[in-house]
Image: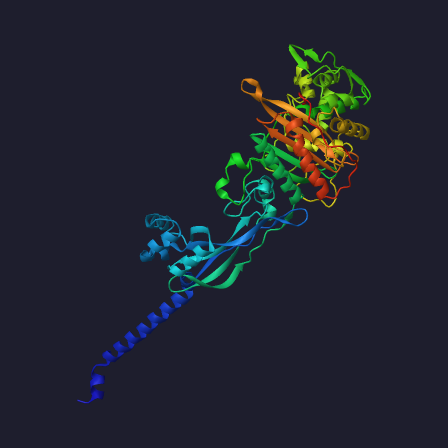
Length: 569
């Protein structure tokens, strides 16, 4: 039988074959359409995930510069180790070697991988050294790569730690200027796509998904030279007098700019192991102290502003003590009749008390408020305290008397410096600025010009006079004005007999004030405790150096200071 006749006798066989072939072609075509059209995006995404990955593209934080452009904080590039958890989970053989390089045990690494198993990214170790990065790269562990990040570095070290603050490991501000201006300084990270090899390692950048944006630079009012000078002298004084703490603030008298702000104990922001709150607390702005006799100039200011007194008015301080309620207020000796200038020169508590009790409570309080007491300095530094000044409705005579010589009121060193700047610049209270200003900011009237000028002369007498309490604050070739203060510390059982805070606040040159400075030494326990003994010499050394660094012309030639008399406050 011929082939043709067999095909005719069994035509269904041919049709079946054709049908099966056509059905197969239709199934394949349908599957292709389904894969390309219906699941095309999904499959493309899955393929991309297996061969590429989108990761963060970091950029550097803005620099912090001093007023002359010297770097105070910079961000340096550093590598961090990251991994794709699922890929790394399959590389058991490499875990031991990898764990050793990232300071983990294999068990800790296994737990870390398990916790992040459902994620696309996890950090293994942040901010490794270049040598560590090389060793980890050499291991060629599947799924493990390096990511470029930035670490903050502070060239000035501990000398500017409290002013600048620091950042955390993610380069976000945590304290000081770094926190206050974090939004300005912070970089905005971008995103980039990387190609991966068969082992899951990143080998090439394909594209930038979104561009990273660097932080903006910030120019401070700080002069790093004066900052270091103040830091060095304060540290030496703390060690010399076995004190528990201290602060120094230096201001530009005319603009309110902060030229230096230092505290002890200090901390180095480059060493993260030291970053504990008791150490990095910025005492100059967060801690409040009773200012003692450094408040007397403001009592005299209120007296002159009241119209009842002039700089030549006399106050009878005899017999060297005065009874207010059940409290006897004493001087170190009977000074007899004193002018207002004499009250400051001799630092007479009795004189200040008699002046304060003669004033209207409301008017006295308003004068102090105009000078910024009981309010922040507008420095924008984190945690700044506003001080404590009770309203006059709560005053009884002993409160008003104590306030006149600096008890019953609390201030920060920065707050006190701002008030002295109002005397130095002719009576205007300026906002404090940590940023360099192109022109002085507008302030608010605090004292009349005549009152401010009278106080400048009186405070000069308190330093330059042979009988002034601030003689050790003198600076060769310059006229200096200022006031000492010594305060017993308040404890749970009342005022201590053996714990003090020593102050000196002043400005120079007295003929044309340019710089204002406050020195506070907390609990000096060796070599004296009076402000004239402990704080005034620090003022002299820092102010003398600062005046010369800024090339400010001398306005006088004075004899070297002599040792203070016993009982100087």
